[in-house]
Image 1: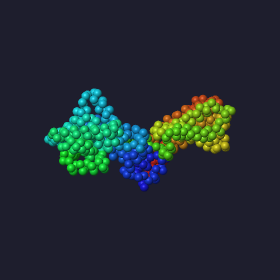
Image 2: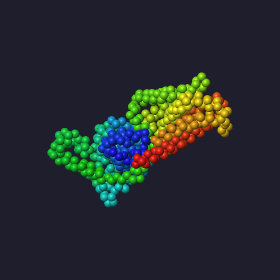
Image 3: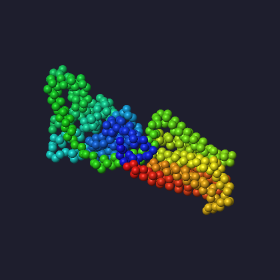
Image 4: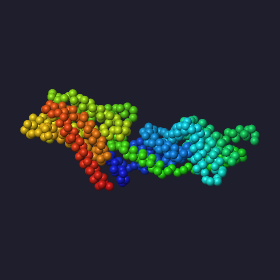
Length: 200
Length: 302
């Protein structure tokens, strides 16, 4: 197996790795990739990043709405992942771990915003929604308004379930709540959205 | 709707949402299916929830900006490259629990013992400076232990300067042995003493005794050369700054002993100055030649 040029430019003292057969990073689970990433395997990081960068950005945009804030938190999420990678334990779900990092950053950011300007966070969500609405689609706009009017916890739970594909158990870990509490949040969120759709 | 049926519908209410979130157990799914087949109200509710669930998909999310994606990726990749392990065999060392402390201590003791065995024959403790050697070996041992501790903790970046110091230290010990054996089996200090005794017959260089001072300078230069050559070969010139810093550090570490030895024969800072010069010169030439050799090998390999 011939390794790429950039691998050859590494330390000579590590030359045994030139001849080791490594499975393709894309065939590994998130947890297996993290073990490699902990050992500074660049390809493992690239694969994790390719798998999660868009998802995390989507998560942040749905939660915050402001591209500038999202860009900052997006970078911070992956930098925290990078700096904290050695503290990751393979028995943990990587996905849950990563979303917990992102979610904590969002909460911190919202908390700061709420302190500085009350209700600014909600405005941001509404602003994001306004930008995303195709012109003249009244029903869609109402639905987006309904989504924006969910409580922060409800929105958090719905986003993690619907868009990020997390199970209730995983959402509970990310949010630091019980599984039943997550169930209740999603039930209420869905009920609220259904009622809004009925009204419109 | 009868109260009995209403109770039943209320029970199924939460299952309707769970159906969409994929949280239904197999038996719950079957039960819900049979209930929906009988209950028009719940079936209508289910259709509404399905529309809500689908409508969530219509909330568009802007694509991640390419510049942000690349910038974040680059930041982390370049940090990974900086922290790349120079000694992959260390990956196999256990690094949990008590091993985290035992291994550095063991490694430090072992390497210092080896150094001591190599160096002890150089020194005649009846004449020379055991009060210098004791702190010197204590420092070495702490360096080795510190280096291994950082490596075991995977803090490669921080361990690199210590790696360099270790390389230098070993080089100096080994080259001292080599020089000793080359000069008719006498150890280095005896050789230098002999040169010092011959000084009046060989003249002076810039006011300093030529052979005695150059003996030390050349041996240190050779030692630095070999250490730096290995580092240059392994890493190119990326660590040149650290090689120089380590070179200065080694100078500080070793030169009290050299100074005291020189002082026995009437030399002072001149011997230290020439030693530092030899050390830096050896580092520069060694690292440059190592890096050149590395370039040639890489070019041949690719």
